[in-house]
Image (cartoon, rainbow, N blue to C red; front, side):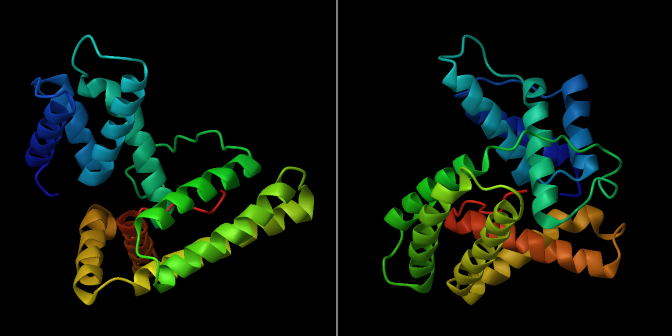
Length: 232
């Protein structure tokens, strides 16, 4: 989004919705904070995802006594931005010098169990007779076998499991892409280009193409609600 003021306005509107209609004005220091996200290239959808994370964590503690302010969401927004950059291959050096915020990885076996559960949910809500559904079924069966060995896997055996997770992830995204209509695929590619637009001038052509493909694949993943199988 090229207009930072419009970016801030949409953030303010979304925050109002998440606060169940309570208006929290994004002005003064808060305005500068959110405008800084726009200037750093945080896509609007990524910022909204960060706000969702903050709200979910707040709601898990019980009913809120006061509306949530945007300042409290910054860490979650930047974490979501960091996840997005890793997914699409945009490095911190391209992102105007902001530093990566790394989070502790889950144990490999727990990661596999988690993605099995998420894939089972996706399988349960989608059509049962297409290539993607068949790919999910096959992935779940293989992941269930991997889960047991992942508990004690070390060294080369563990590296093989991690590599296989990447292969399975790529296969699922390929199957999901194949299920898209031409119109949807075109829309997702346009959306990917829009997300990356703030970075294009600072990226070599080959890096731009890789990032564009990564952004498109991320949107495909989101459109089918597929979990990330890779373990990085």
